[in-house]
Image (cartoon, rainbow, N blue to C red; front, side):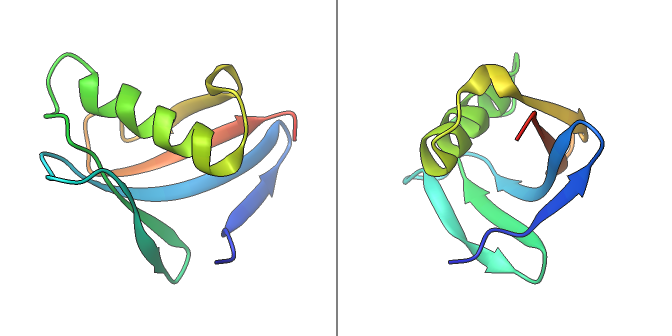
Length: 85
């Protein structure tokens, strides 16, 4: 599975689409340049976003501290920056 990373001045950008409230969490697949991810959490109080970053951290073998959601904080479609790669 090739990860569709986009190089930018501070690291890399990753487009993700998140489905909340799933029975099973994890990477669902890649469609074009978007990674589809399922999380068990509901989108309340940032729980789904935290779970999303945990899944990406484990999948990419990068610490969560290097990742930030730069677009789509309250949306299903997000852009994640992975700093300093």
